[in-house]
Amino acid sequence: MIEIGGFTALYIFMLSAFTGYEVISRVPVILHTPMMSGSNFIHGIVLVGAIVVMGSAETVLEQVIGFFAVALAAGNAVGGYVATVRMLEMFNPKDKKGEA
Amino acid sequence: MDIFIQVVYFVAAILFILGLKKMSSPVTATGGIVWAGIGMIAASLVAFFEPGVFANSTNVVLIVVAIAVGSGIAYTTAKRVQMTDMPQMIAIYNGMGGGAAAAIAGVELVKMAGGHHAIGGTTQVLAVLGALIGAVSFSGSAIAFAKLQGLMNKTFRLPMHMVLNLGLFVLTLIAGMIIGFSDEVSIQLVLVFFLMALVFGVLFTTPIGGADMPVVISLFNAFTGLAVAFEGFVLGNAAMIIAGTVVGSAGTLLTQLMAKAMNRPISNILFASFGSDSGTAAEEDIEGSMKEVQGTDAAIMMAYAEKVVIVPGYGMAVAQAQHKVSELTKLLEARGVSVKFAIHPVAGRMPGHMNVLLAEAGIDYDKILDLDEINPEFPTVDVALVIGANDVVNPVARTNPDSPIYGMPILDADKARNCIVIKRGRGAGFSGIENHLFYADNTSMLYGDAQKAVGELISGIKELQ
Image 1 (tube, each protein chain N blue to C red):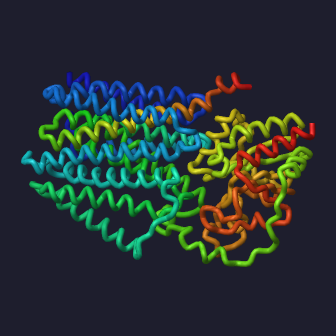
Image 2: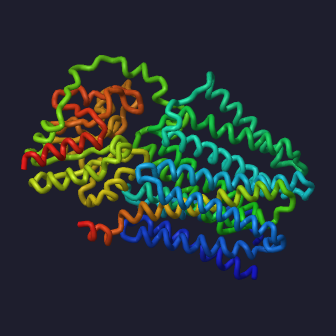
Image 3: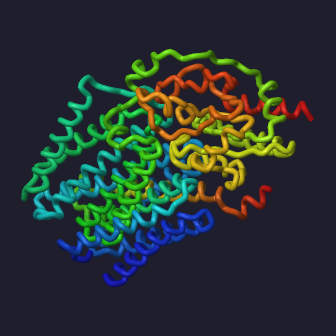
C-alpha cells in the first residue's frame, strides 16, 4: 500500500484517462469486439484488490463477501483472457495461411 | 518486500497499457493480450505478499479456493462457448468484475460498521461510489446476458418506469452519501444501499432493446473500469487505479463510437427505449409487396453475376452460418464472381462482431469492407445478399424523417441491381420498424434459417457445374 493522496490521485486519474482514450482511438473497427473483451480482461486487476481485502477479513461475514469478491474477480480475469485469446486467434495471419 | 510489490504493480501497469496498444493492430494483437496476461499473473501473485494477507492462514486457503472456483467456471465457459455467443459472455465476465469491485467496497464498509475506524474523507466517498457503480454494472450485465442469451426476450417496463427508476437512483445516492460521509455506519443501511443499487441496475437495463445491448455492455465495461479504479484509491493500489481508469476512458470512447454509428445520442439509447412503441412508425403505407424466391433461382442469379456483396447481420450469427457463407464465397469466386462483404458498424451484437465471425470462417479481411468503403460501390453491384440483417439496410433511415432510425447511416443495399434477403420470417426487425427494402421491386425474399438458406444457395450453384 502506498499513500496516494489528493492531487497526486487526481493527476494519476487524469493521465490514465487520456492514455485509455489515446490507445483505443486508433483501433480499426474489425478489432472493436476483441478490444472490448481485452479491456474487460484488464479490469480483472480487481483480483489484486480482492485478494488484499480477503486477506484482511476478520469476521465470517467479511470472509463470505471477500470470498465472492475473489471468485468473481478471478472469473473476470480468466474469462476475459480466454475469450480475448480465442477471438484474436482468428486474426492470426499464420493460421490463415494454414487454412488456405 | 514492499518495494518489490510496488515494482511488480508498476511493471504490470506498463504491460497493461502496452498490451492494449498492441491489441489495436491485427498483427500484434495476440502478443498484446499475452503481455497483459503476464502482467495480471505477476500482480496477482505479489498481492499475496501484501502486508496482512499471510497473517491468517484460513483466509489464504479461502483465497486459493475462491480463485480456483472462479477461474475454473470462467475457463470452462469461455472455452466452450460458441463464437456467436461471445458478446453475452463478455457481458457476464464484465459483470463479475463489477461485482468484485462492489464486494471489495462491501468488505470495507462492513469493517467500518463492525467498529473499525472510518476510512474517512474522499476515500470513503470513493469507496461508496465504486460500490454503487460496480453493483449497477453487476446486475445490469446479468440482465444484458439474459437478454442476449434469449432467456429474456421482452423489454420489461413498469408503469412510470423512468420516474420510478430515477427516484430509486436518487434514494440510492442519498443512502450512499449518508454512508460515505458518516463516521459510523449501520450494517442495515449498507445492506439496503447495495440492494437498491442492484435493483437499479436491473431496472436500468430491462427497458433497453436487444439491438442496443452492445452499447450497454460497452457502457458497463467502462463502469466496471471506473469502479475498479475507485476501489484502487481505497486500497492505495496504483495498478488498480491505472488499469481501471484506462478501461473506464477506453470503454467510454468505444461506447461513443458505437452510439455514433447508430446516429443516436447515448442518452437516447439508454433512456428512450425505442422499439417499445413500435406502433407509431410501422403503420405507414408501404408500396409494393414482398416477393418470395426459391433457393435455386437465387443461386442462379448469384452464379451469373459479376459482382456480389454480402451483407451479414445478427441472423447469420444466430444460425452459425458463417462457415456456409465462406463455402458459398469460395464457390462463387471459383466461377469468377467478385465477392465482397459489407459490414455495418453495428451489425450483429457488437462492433466487429461480424468481422470476428467471418475471420473464424477463414474469410480474408481484405474482402471485408466497412460502410464508407462499400456504399459508393452498391450501384455497380449485381446482387446484394442480405443475410439476417434488417435495420442496417432499411432505406427509411435515409428517406423518412419520422422514423426512429432516421439519420442512421445504412448500407445502401437497395441501390444494388438486385437484392436477395435471407430472413427467418416476415416480422419486423429488432427496432420493430418495417423495412422498405423488403418491398422494393428489385428485392427478393429467401425465407428460412440463414444456415439452411445459404446451404440451398450452395447446392443450387453446385448443380450448375
